Length: 323
Image 1 (cartoon, rainbow, N blue to C red):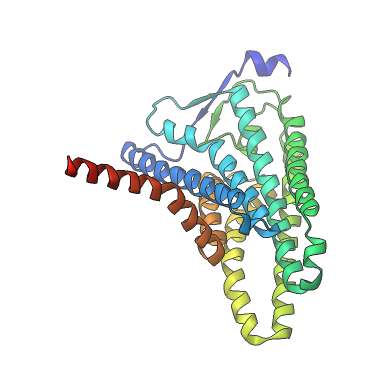
Image 2 (tube, rainbow, N blue to C red):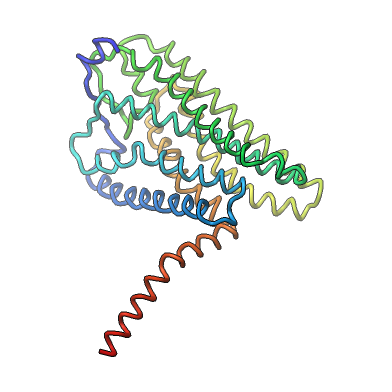
């Protein structure tokens, strides 16, 4: 890291979502509730998948990993955003800003590949059911998860390779609630055209390629089911429609921000909320609450942990009344 980075700009100022104190107080409670729901919901899914033997299948193994990534993705910037709603001076150190860039691209890059893996799992289950157990073995699922983390790591390190050495010699105000890469690189004291091209090549291609794979897999699944039965087609479409909605909400903002980073819009920071907050809360709803087996397993887990406590409380009341 050169001297310009360490001596001139030691911290960045985050403007957040708004400047209105009333709105900031509302946002504080609103996003606090959302964050608690994300963490508790995804932790419950992870605990259920790992503890219930009936869910030890490829689909739920990938779902458990998705829930873990969602917790990480929601936690890299959301707690600071919530705390900043009650703070007048919203600053972040240079190293903290670099950490934001590192984690956002690690988790989003990994989640993109993980969503493709889940779509591939559904493709094999529907289009090649006789070979499902052989193709989607435990080893295959583990490899797919490892690939998702490896792609995320390579993706974020390639972004940092040209970001950490950028010369920041004065402007340090980031119009967002976290250090978003296009906004940070726009503050560098050099011609940002080359940097923006690198962002498009890296983030843009990853977003577009994984999104194309997802859409293609869903089309193949729907066509395959349609050729078998129109009734099955309607059922499959009702299931996949919600999945496609989540994919669009996740990939849409990513593609809009990173495929065209040359024009920075005030809308970008609100779009970033979709893949940092809303998608992590939608994933457990879409992939879990509409799943009969998952709901039964969660009910079993809740009863297992709450019923003994209720029984002990009732026995204590009975003993008290007898005495």
